[in-house]
Image (cartoon, rainbow, N blue to C red; front, side, top):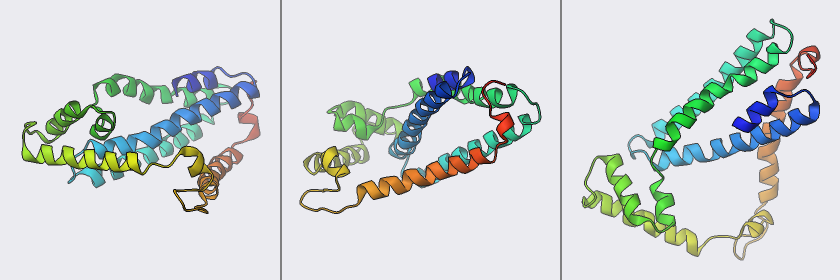
Amino acid sequence: MTIGCILQVSAFSPAQMIVARIISGIGNGLNTATAPVWQAETSKASMRGKLVVIEMICNIGGYSLSNWVTYGLSFAGGAVAWRLPIALQMLFIFVLFGTVPWLPESPRWLISHGRVQEAEQIIADLEDLKVSDPWVVTESKEIQWAAQVERENSVPFKDLIRGRTGTQKGTSVIRRLLLGAGTQWMQVSTHLLTLQPSKTKLNC
């Protein structure tokens, strides 16, 4: 997302802007695909649903904020009207740079990679319990069991894309993928169409 942001702010050609948007999209996709899952796996069961909802509220709030900033700066005219709103996202990226290294790894990810002791320590820390506590041991065993089931019943990616899961066919994965991606594409396209052409030129 940092690379995409820098390339967008410094863009003076449509080609560079397109490449920058693709890079930013990949970064944002990785963010939105992993953050809710990680949050669910590193929060107490009693708080899990509430925290995931709050995360999505913050996500929507950020999108709303970006639209208002873009609208406010649209009256400024010139390159600042679109370069500054894009650059302001770096403030949130710096927050991520400063906080992510201190966050615990997902216990599920650690167990799936054979690092059970580390996972149990994180589970104990998250619940403010000792590693030997029965609750921690039970939670660890449940995650290990789930990880084992996932390994034994995993579906190759190529079969998943082709719509095959084991002996079943016709799961319509591609159709579902296109529907999900299409709604996102239409949302962004609608947003871009509302901008005045004079304010989206890269040679401002």
